[in-house]
Length: 192
Length: 127
Image (tube, rainbow over all chains, first blue to last red; front, side, top):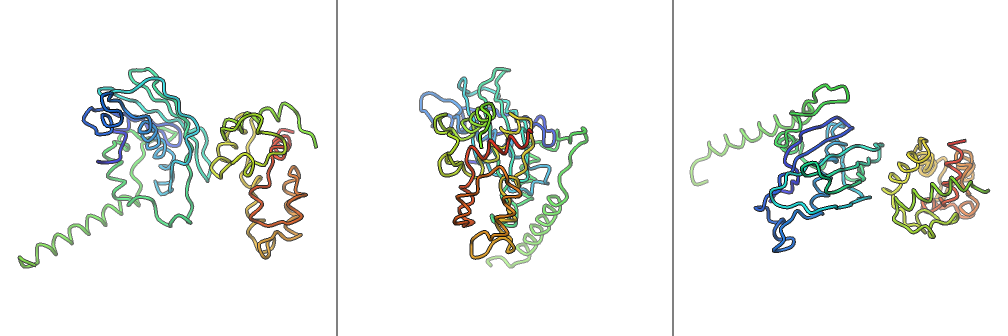
């Protein structure tokens, strides 16, 4: 199972706000297993979805190189359960951003009705936690494309945001490595 | 040094919201880390709430002068030197450093700030 609790970005304004969609399906294990007989979308996963939405929102301006982690759930109020068949909108708005972290306010709605209100703090880890990012850039780039982030992302002036060059380069290098490994595999005599 | 009731009340609200503590725990002498249990990430939240509540800008360096606590000019054998203490007093006139001065171990600096210190800092920003 993949740990993605958002399906797609439908709005993204650099360092300002982002909205994602999450379609809740009965087919997802946690929906039924969390409270057998009463399938609903667990609150912890609503928080995770908002953390993914807000975390990508506050790390994009740094080319996704910032090691961004959810550090604190300052507020989490749940008004009504989310159940299979619901299409959830997770809207994150940046309240504050500093070199050490950011605060995001989140609102979760279904058909325009507020189901949850959140406030999350993110920490930006420094080099003590490793010199590289938390994810291989080519993998993160693939995920961002699947989430359609670059289809909707704009900066504060409305200009389209493209994938960062360092991610594209990592993708090119990974592709070269893959082609090379396939070529080596194909050139080997059978049985080796 | 007294702080105004209005400032104390707003700081108290910010700390209650950010740290999930009760109002009777937020006394003027309570230390942010030791008594109220603030962790490093909480300061981001506290600063945000103070900025919003008072309409001020808070620089992290104001509350944690990292250079004084790390540079060899100001630190020797894990303790802040007399020069470092003088610099701290200059940069943090709102903080009560009398206790820290007696045994200025760098590792104890994190638990130096009290609620009163924070109130006086805010007053210095809105003055």
